[in-house]
Amino acid sequence: MTQRTVAKTVGILALLMMATLLWTGCAAALSRTNPALPPGFQDAQLPPGEVDAYLYLSQGTPIGIPTERFVKAEEIDESIKRTFVIPHVLEVSGLSLWTGSSLDSFAGAVKFPDDKTAEMVQQLMSTRRDVRRTVSWRESMTLNLVSGSGEWAGGMESSLRANQGSQFKAAVPVAWDLLHLMPEAPQGKPVAAGFVHVNDALMNFLASKAGLNVSGIGQAFGAANVSDIAFIAYADKPLTVPEQIGPSYFKEAGLGGIFVAQSTYPGFVLSFFLGSFADRVGLEKGPTIKGQEVLVKEIDGTYLMIATLGNTFFVALAPTREKAEALLTSALASHVKG
Image (cartoon, rainbow, N blue to C red; front, side, top):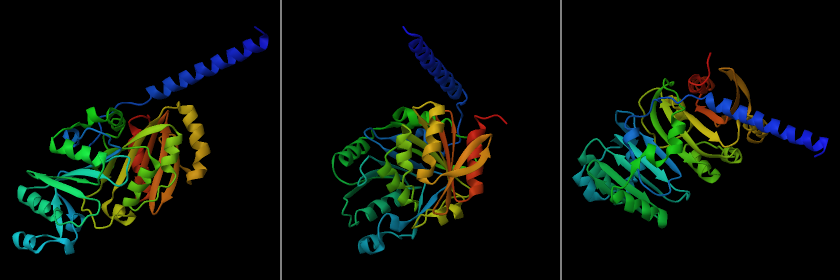
């Protein structure tokens, strides 16, 4: 073995040891938390099968949702109008929504305060002129629905009708662990939680439903070797869902969110990657929070802030820069002293 070979071998071993130390140090810095979660989240059931995104919404008090989000006024049959007094806004106790990797199918379960309201909405849904084929049926106060066709929609319908499911902890253990890096004392009341599997097209589609353009963010997470992102949304006051959701609604409701994801890359590689990738997605240097460098991007009137601790991303999204900073501060507080 030549002197050059020995030196090269020693150098490689030193780099591996340093990487191991950095990896271990970064992993040990994160503390498992007891996060504030929306009421009923831990007991909610997820159907078996491929679920690439999940949203659970509950605030402990009824949530107002426009009736036209279920069925258009012109589609309502006259016989239903004679049977029920149909309000412009329906009160919902909570809801769960699931989707697979396809953008043309989804499933959900909507819980109403009483059987009569659930029965009325089920009859309203039966009058929909829906080209995507939405199937709905009632179980007591809960209305189940599956929209779309094909294997995924068929599997979801079978699972829901058979009451097959498991709690989030068992169904999505990776996302469950990510949720347990979230703040215990957040800014605002937790009103929604869930996860999304990193898929650029799916993430862009879901964000567009909220009136946001996050083009490139999904690709960035994918390139960073992130597989799942967990999230919790927080509100400053009780929610009422409008007919159209956009940045102005987030500001009016004081609605923001924290997202957590972990890369398979060690922390020092992730920091290098993030620094080199920031310009491509429009991230700029932001404030220092809890001693951590933060990147920021304005998206359609909302603010995105990103910080990393080791191999973990902490992301805050809020209608104002101040709220985004407050959310990110609460997220980092459990893991960074001072």
